[in-house]
Structure formats: C-alpha cells, structure tokens
Image (cartoon, rainbow, N blue to C red; front, side, top):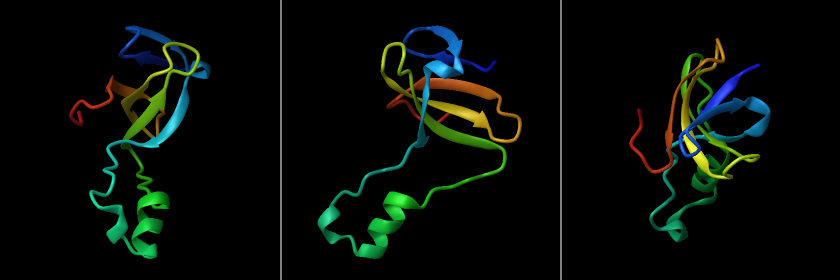
Length: 90
C-alpha cells in the first residue's frame, strides 16, 4: 500500500483516498484570446511524461478535498515530498 502525506491534513493516508490531478505548475495563458488552435491543443493536452522525478497535482478526495503538489519518482512510485498548492516548486 502506498501512503501519501497530505500537507493540509498533516497525515499520511492510503493512496485510495487520493486522485491524480495531472502535471503540476502548468501556467494558464495570460491572454487566452490570442492563442491559436495549435497553442490551445498544446496547453490542454500535451504534458511531460518523464521517467524519474516528476511534479504532480493530487487531490485528497476522501479527506480535506484540497489539491496539493507532490514530487514522485515515476519509476519507483515513491513520493519524495508533498507541498501545498501555490507554493514554489520543490
């Protein structure tokens, strides 16, 4: 069983309480009306899929319900750290 630490609840809970929310730190366009269809496609659908250390968004769906960021190794599935949404990349 994988335990994930929620930085808001301050406890480690089983993975089944959480939902993956995609890649972390994706900046929204400042002026969306200037984006071409190709730029929108890239913004909405194209994500990094690295082997190794990866910054991700997670949601504690069966707990506080809040989104947070995590650094996880995609090879070993080990969570290096978790931190609150809005904090700088760790």
